[in-house]
Amino acid sequence: MALAMLGAVSQGILWGIMVLGVFITYKLLDIADLTVDGSFALGGCVCAVLVVGGMDPTLAIIMAMLAGMVAGAVTGFLHTVFEIPAILAGILTQIALWSVNLRIMGKSNTPLLRVDTLFSSVTDATGLPQNIASILVGLVFAVIIIVGLYWFFGTEIGSACRATGNNEAMVRALGVNTKVTKMIALTLSNGLVGLSGGLVCESQSYADIGMGTGAIVIGLAAIVIGEVLGRLVPGQLRAFGSRLTAAVVGSVVYFLIRAIVLQLGMDANDMKLISAVIVALALCVPVVWEKYQLRRSYSRASKALASAGATDPAEGSTSNDSTIEGGR
View (spheres, rainbow, N blue to C red):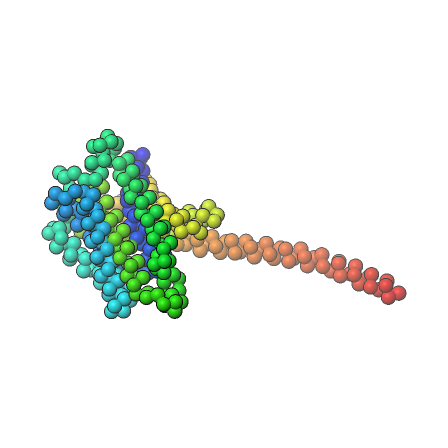
């Protein structure tokens, strides 16, 4: 059980980098970018082929990130230049990437069992178990990326990207080219997704053509779970850095829930159903909680008005009596 939990934490952190990419498009641009399913697998396929070909594992991960950025740029190009709706542009790129990934690997999967990876190098250098090494490497990448995103979205162009999702018409009125900001956000988002795909590929020691299937669902679930958990700490999700951290924490919690469910004996073939249920619950809980708080506030206000109404007649009768006595 403990080994399964460690594995879930390590996978949650590595997938959390993908969640940060989804966060950029979903929360900042208000776009559910379906390119993610293809660009995640693209990063894994590129990384696997390069590592097998003899490239340094760290450099291969960087190349996986660049490949993801190219995929995001294609989606951005279709959306901004040809004005194809963002969700449809993402679907088109995702479908195309299936064939591209097969072309890159030449087969449906590529094992990395006989080559050195970043994680095996860390394990050999430190003597730590594979799961612990994965957690450490994932934390290093996650912290660097969160700090980098926090800095970038505090700059002028980064602030323009954030404002584009909030009010695109206002940003255009201020003279900002929203096509450029969308292109930057989509490219950066899928770059992180490709980076995550490369890390997951080296962590699990193989790349598969279907490894990105359902990635967007995992990303959305992790974001929502992170927000729900963040609301338990009042005022913490107001800061942008806290929201980024909450996205990674949500990814870890998501994979922990999956691991616990599997340990309880549920069939692995039901993971898609489990994922859908987790997403539905994560989306429903905030709504139910908000309605509960609203109803509770309304009940308190009603009681306050009722108690105030009970004392007003007495005060009114007292004032009337004094008026009558004054008249006499």
